[in-house]
Amino acid sequence: MARFIDEAKINVKAGDGGNGCVAFRREKFEPRGGPSGGNGGDGGNIFIEVRTNLSTLLDFRYRTHFEAERGGNGSGSNKQGRQGEDTIIPVPAGTLVYETREGSNHLLFDLVQPGEKVLVVRGGRGGRGNASFKTPTFRAPRKATPGTPGEERDLFFQLKLIADVGITGFPNSGKSTLLAGCTQARPKTAAYPFTTLTPVLGVATMAEGRTLILADIPGLIEGAAEGKGLGHRFLKHIERTRLLVFLFDLSTGQFAEEYAVLKRELASYSQVLAEKERIVVGNKADIPEARDNIKRFRKDFPEARCISGLTGEGVRELLEEIGARLTDKQKGTP
Image 1: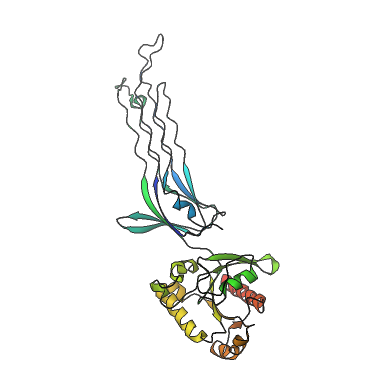
Image 2: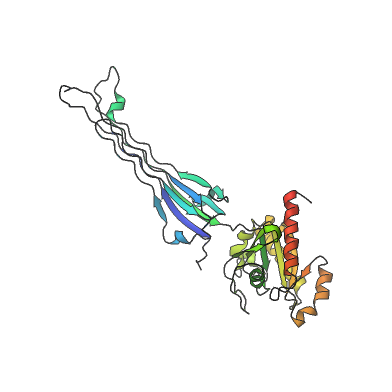
């Protein structure tokens, strides 16, 4: 599995323009053929393009400088220099592109659509050859201009995953097990906290061929928004989701307290997350200790669902509710 990297810093430099040329025609029977120096070619541009086969910014750990090709110099016989080749930098969908200047980052682009392509630095203009300076009164110019430098920028990339649903909760609430049970994703599962170290995406197939993209986010703990635990690093990945699933381990019996912590941490991180629509779900209903707490759980959260991500109990019904909620949101149903 590719290592998950969601932030990167790079430098981009467009190609410089080629220099113009000073030359004169010296052909038989035309000893004074006039200026024939060609213009320089423009430097190559640098574009950023969204590619669907990428899901991480890992490649930028190994390459941090990108430079487009320089334009060719002009030459005699009015030959223009070759234009520099453009450079395309591929990124995954959900990449935010910032320019870093004066110690802070300024958002340039938010790239979410597959195939979306944007220009980040423009190549320099080619210089003028002496042939371009010829006029009726200035018939033998001996000057040419150099090409202009290509633009250069320091960029900062930040990846925010694009998913329909974000599954969040305390460590060991069963988020990875639920994701594995309803999608083809195979996140690591184990009986210890912070088994999930990075976000994992999975695609669930619904009726009539519809699909849902779900994101399993590393577990949150109290103080996550201030940097405790692992979840704070990945809260940005659920800002784009259309719906949140708050998942609780029914066997602990601490769901009311955990719910209050989750709401507080999301609000501390972002008001967008605090206001996002959510479904409350109790997990591990197959465990005897959990069954003793289901009645109290339903009293605290009357509209919540109880499921078992391990056995699949209630999972299909949960997915159907999620699909219905998202359809209503798309139609604008309150």
